Length: 154
Length: 332
Image (cartoon, rainbow over all chains, first blue to last red; front, side):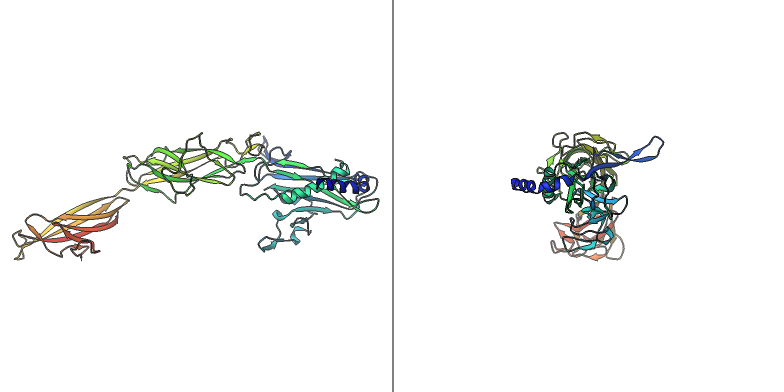
C-alpha cells in the first residue's frame, strides 16, 4: 500500500515540482497569556506554546508569499482545525469556514450544523472544522501577507 | 519556509488525511486529554502559472502537546447534617472526589475533624475508599485508605466516593454539630494556579496547576440528636359514696403523662405500669389521649393488659410531645 502510493506520487511529481516553489507557506502557533505588569495593569502577550492546557487561547499565524516570478492566480489558503482546537474567529473576518469537514463553505452565519441525531441548528464557532481565505486577485510575484485566526484548546 | 520537495510534500498530505480519519478523541468535560498532540498544517492552493492546473502546498507542521491540567473537586455527598448520638462509633460522612483535570492523577486525601467554629470534634477513625463503587459504606468490603500507600488514581472526569468514619464523643450534647472536612490534593503538585511542574504531566508533557489549585476540600456535618422521656403519674380516688376515700370498693384512676424531650425521636416507645397490690384492674379501662383502648395483646390496638400490668405502645414519638394514658383499678 505504502509503496504503491510512493510510486504514484513519483509519477505525478515532475509536472508540479518546479511550480510548487512559486509560493511559500508557513504556520506558527502562539499562546495568548495575560501577564500582570509591575504597574498593576495586565498585558496580553503571545508566547511560544511550550506549555498548553485545555482552555488556553491559541493564535495561529499563517504567512504566505509568492516567491516565484509569475503571479499565482486563484489563490486560497485553508487551515483545517486540529480536533482539539475550537475556532475562535479571525482578526479580519474575511474568511469562509466549513462545519462539515470541508464539504461546504461559507461565512459562519450562513452555515447550518447537522448533528448526528438529526439535530439541525445554526452553526457555531465551535463547529468549525476548516477556515479558508480566498483571494479575489492574483498573488503577484514578491507579494505576501499573513492570516491570523484564534482558537481555544478544547 | 519554502516548500520541501514534491515527493515528501505529497506524502505528507496523504498521511495527513489518514491521520485525520483516525483521529476521534472523545470529548471530555475536563478538556482534551493530557498528552494529545495538536498538529496544525495550513494549505495554500493556486493555479500553476505554467499550465493552470491547481497546485496545493502544505505549510510546515506545528505540533503542540497538550499538557496536564491538575484540578480536583471535593463535594460532600450527604444531603444535610447526619444525625448521630453521643458515644456511637463508625459514624459515616460521605464525600465525592473528582479528577477535574485532563490527565490520570493520584490524589492524597486528608480528613480534618478539628475544624474551628463547630460545637464538638469527633474522634477520627478511618477514611474508606468505596472500592465496590456502590456509594454506600460496606464494612469489610470497601478499602481502608492509607495515605501514600493506596492514594486513589483517577482518570480525567473519574470520581471516587470516600467515607470518613468517626467516633462521637460521649460528652456531645443534643443539637451540637461537628464539621469534618475532607481534602484531596494532586500528588504531582499543587499551589498557585499556573504553577508548572516541567515534564511531570500525564502523557509526557508538563503538569500545570489549574484553577482549583490542584487541591479542594468540602465539609460534612454531624448533628447530635438525643431524646428522652419522662413519666408523671397521678391518681384520683372515687369511693362508692362519691367521696375520695381510698376504701375497699373505691376506684383509683391513674394518669400517666409521658413527655418526650430532645431533637431526636424515640422509636417503639412503650409505657407500662404494674397494677398495685391489693387492687384489681378494671377491664377495658385503658385510654390514650381520652380514647379507649382494648385489653387484648397483639390485636393491633396500642393497649394491652397482661401479667398484672397495663402497657400502651406509642410507636415512634418525636421530641417535645406528650401522651396521656389513663387506667382504672378497684381497691380490694
